[in-house]
Length: 256
Image (tube, rainbow, N blue to C red):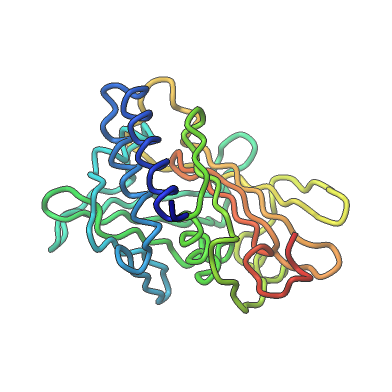
């Protein structure tokens, strides 16, 4: 049996297991179907980079209601568009007491849906791209096609072995800090400095018991010697994002 056939068999098997163990949660089935599309990225997706980074869905599966069911959070803005609707999630920098930082530092992510309510585009604002540069964001999305599924945690662990490496300069600490400002905390981790920021989602409603999801704790790590941004970890509207930028570089001396 060919490797691709074996892989497809186990993914279908996993889908059946998920269907049985998540009774009534049809949105997880649609999320898994979208994950399967990632294995043929160029067939099902397109990326556009301007001042924003946008992931376009060529054959959309997920509905707007699925994002609420998955995150238990609601968007900051919900406005009609020619295609359907746009949901914008605003994240604002806050202090240890969740008070807004002045001058204001904020970023957004947009979800665009067609008239049937299916997602057709997912965009990230310029400030977000300071901690997740477009080329690295795209290659990390592509790596989801080879990701491992943790059914218990309902998470994907991307595998950089399944994608081509890229040639790109890593952002410098000075450039990142000029946009994000001072962090809430700095942790010393050997050869790495970890800068911690808190961003609060502006939302009109949060389902009871999920209030903590409105707070995004973002950790960005810098190499002390090179002053380069090497890792980003965060949770945004319930979506956990972790990118090790060095793993995507084509210089073998940089990866680990």
